[in-house]
Length: 192
Image (cartoon, rainbow, N blue to C red; front, top):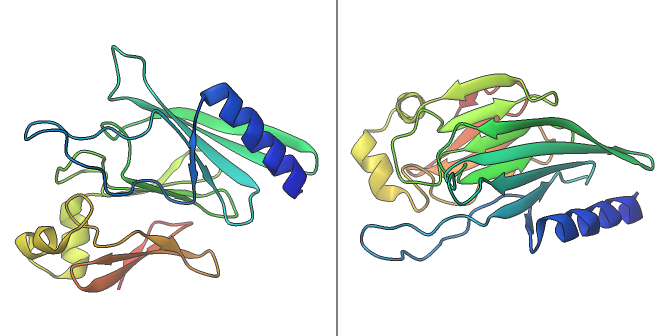
């Protein structure tokens, strides 16, 4: 299985150029100037912990760099097939992406710093939207003033540290405003 996934990753890397491979996207990027933000990598591949699912992110052409297309691949035995492809609604894409072993995709925040309508978005293995939560909905669950959340954020408007999948693959854990937010990977439910 590892050989198949390694081969798939090699093939995807050749097709996409120098793709960035990770389990969650978005490290701190330096500001280019007062009015500009660093753009995310043009190509990324996010791999599920068991390496059975790979989400490939590709930015739009030069005339539409703010769009991002995502394709989820699933491997079974010696086969690797695309499960879905879609353009993501986040401008320049999400700040963080995690893929569970079951093929659920959790997209967090937007690359640009805004109080996003897409603070949390969960897609099922077929690419259907299971849940979507705005920054204001996250703030309501945290029961913390917006200004305090933004002040403590290290990534975007609300995230304090890189999110991670729980060991049982059931939740994504996000540190924010001195609290830990849990996001259900299959239903998108938010809880502390």
